[in-house]
Amino acid sequence: MYCRFCGQELPDDSAFCSKCGKAVQHEGAEAAPVKTEPVKPPAPPKPAVEHCRMELVEMDSPWSLFGNTRNRFEVINDKGEVIYQSDKFKVSGFSYDGPEEVSKKYRDLVEKAVLTLAVDGWKKLPGYRRRWFELDFERKIKDKED
Image (cartoon, rainbow, N blue to C red; front, side, top):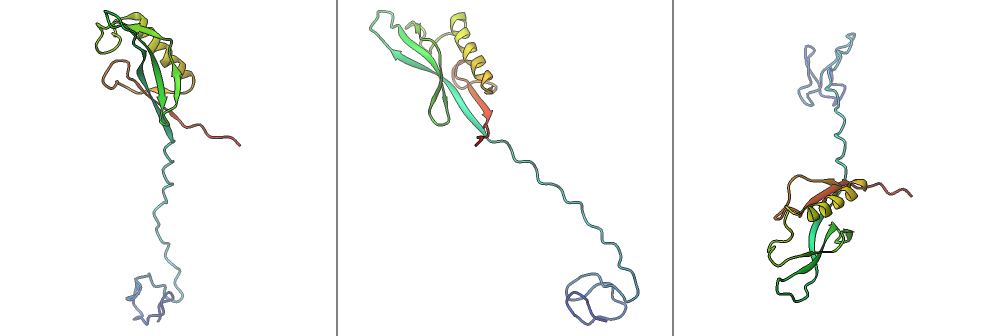
């Protein structure tokens, strides 16, 4: 008897080929069903996302005994493009680390930015970087329709 896969001569009572390892089918016998593992479909690709971040930008700093600065919040995407700008506001020189979170005026400006970005599909990521208003966002990249 010979292996039908590789042609190796085999003893008549062989169940497997000694050369290629395939199961041997004896003449007149039905082929035994071969168990195969179900093929798992590949995991769906993770959606491509883009990111942006909110930062405090100092517009100008006219001389003042109290060091008032004119600022605004800007949201900048991965490409460095400004995609949102808040209204300008003043911060006194006593706020060494930017606008204070306790001020409703500043919280409202940040909340307006967050809501405006949410309308465009941006999701605020948990936490913040160093200061309370330095927020990060992400959204799925929109498919370009041709």
